[in-house]
Picture 1 (cartoon, rainbow, N blue to C red):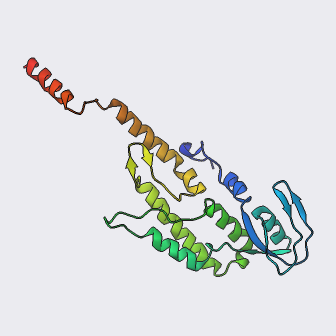
Picture 2 (cartoon, rainbow, N blue to C red):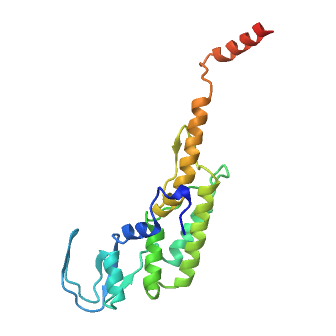
Picture 3 (tube, rainbow, N blue to C red):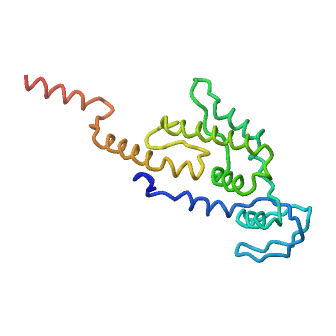
Length: 207
């Protein structure tokens, strides 16, 4: 199925997943594994039950081969996701929604990859999936409802993840283009209000 036109200038979901696979995660090897030379640097010899830090793509490969267990990131747990959900629903003193809760830049792709390949390594995986779905829907609603803070031409969207940016890229590009056009067509008046006075004088002369 073709992507909507406004999304065609962004990344494909598969491309974002490919990028996320370079993120470092922890694993527990099930057997001794020799050192591995990678472009980003060597990975020392791995011995169970000591944890090792490896790129996610390698963790997924070792998991598939049943040679390692993936240690879920600390944020990928029921307790941490419930905290994030509470933060997302918080309002400030003026009753306005709070900002976006802090999550890894590739949190959506990372959680999808880990849960798809290693759900048995994630405690309460079904609950984690539900919390992730609710969290994503809440954040999508925030993004759709408008600009959290719009001052001149600056958007304050802290803690937005890569997939979320990709999803709203077209929407906000169109919004900013419209705002720019409105700004360019708005008449310029000086601080003393001479513009208003000139318009009034023109009206009087016409009468």
